[in-house]
Image (cartoon, rainbow, N blue to C red; front, top):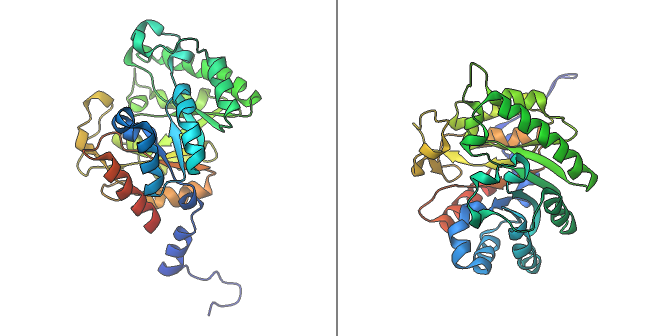
Length: 292
């Protein structure tokens, strides 16, 4: 029994119980990039396999995928709350995009419209090619543009998030670009979808970064990293086996998930960029989530 006025010690059993009560467990989602090749072969069958694996929601990659996946997801009882979109709508560098990747008839306003009409809560800006991010001024300009887009999203009842890779942490002229984004983003217009694999790959401990961004992370990508992987800023140079199923790597995911609740993270998505067997990998990862 605890002494009067003292705080009872938290036992290991109670701690595990707290983890077991994580709200993310009943809403865990999957980013569809994980199964992109399977979707190309059998779109509906792959969405069904995601549901059968135990996921409750999916995160799509663009407006076209929202429209393709939504009727299937509704039939299966899967939710779609968030989606990435073609980053070039913001950067404007359509000269860097192959014609096959240019969405005909789509503007940023149309992307927001499609998301709103389909009941999405979040849109995610998730990438820039190297030519769009070679200088610190590039990051300043993109931050300013995203603030404007974020205001448009907010008017439509949608939250805009920035998804990181590792390149934002590679110093340019002695400055870390991610610091510019943190300082320049209007917190009322744009927040973050933190990818813990990419921050870890860049040598930035995810829990430490999450504490720094307390209250500014709405979404979280849960991913694991192979032990012994060196710091890499260039996403094109990451070995395929560096991407691991949850629990099979060195990212402290228990601490990540527990801290996520405290700092206001609303949704968690599993993602694995590379896997020899993605459908098996997503089962392994959700099994880990269900255990913690």
